[in-house]
Length: 162
Length: 162
DNA sequence: CACTTTAACTTGGCCGGCCAATCAATGCGC
DNA sequence: GCGCATTGATTGGCCGGCCAAGTTAAAGTG
Image 1 (spheres, each protein chain N blue to C red):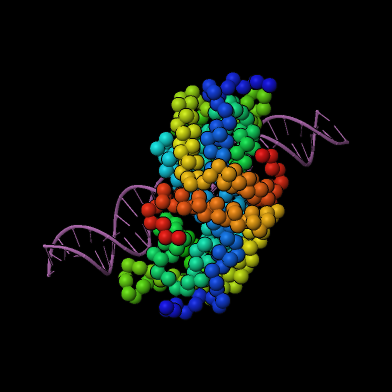
Image 2: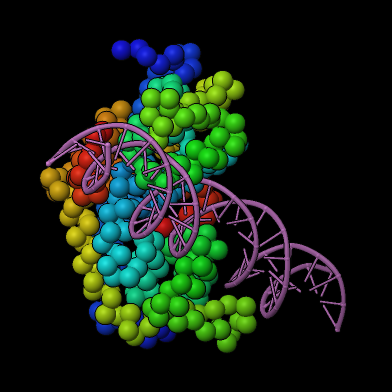
């Protein structure tokens, strides 16, 4: 039962020992993203775009900078995502008359059909994710994730308006 | 306080309503990945590669297919990752004499120095992530994540050898 | 009013990750 | 022994995401 010559001296399941929660979090997040992708794909969206659209559906026409702050992503990420969403007809952009550097972004009328489907898909995903968890467990999970978020947020960006 | 003409009729903070846990999970996962990236970058690794290296350090020379199964990623993802790790000198590959389709992969000797640093970095990340959480909370979080993983795993791949 | 700093994007480059399609070698049924 | 399904791995394509650098325009400062 020892055909392999030991990779490194004293190597012992380091992934789990060094950070069990981090490890589990990574795995779960990946699975969750794949599951989201499967559902969204049918709607013609890619995982990540939902957040942008969600915000636009709620907030109406907004400055791009505001959108960036809201979703908390890198500006360049949002730019590219918007270019694709615009191409797909879900989003419209126009220059801000008040500030010639800025852009105003808004969801198109046709995209509004999508909205309910995205909400439904997202809700379905939530159900799958939390199957078998009681109401108390769900709230506890949410609470703990909130604490973790509060821990990581400052470590990543000083500005953490959430 | 209502300058915007309402994006969609009846749009109400759908992201949070439709799936608060899913939403929080996505946010936390992204922050966690960024934090991991920051730490790993100094070691010359990119986020995601740690899992591959960890397994190789523990398991020694393995068939690539086994590695793929272990990390649970898409085969193509592992292939590309290995190509880069090989280029960086962290990994060595050679054809499997027993099966001319397969490859045997193993961590290089020089990569063993990296190992302790990766473990340390990963441990540090765990600390940051879980700051302010009691031992009971940590175990509870781990337990809940485990349940979620069990939920999502079958939804993504039938084969769920974990 | 010129000059500097800051803000709002954009571009290019690179990696992780997925999917779909492909190629090569093995195994299996008959 | 021969054809066919299966397995192992790779390629190409595309997207999300980051970082670093660059561009344009607004705001602050003397």
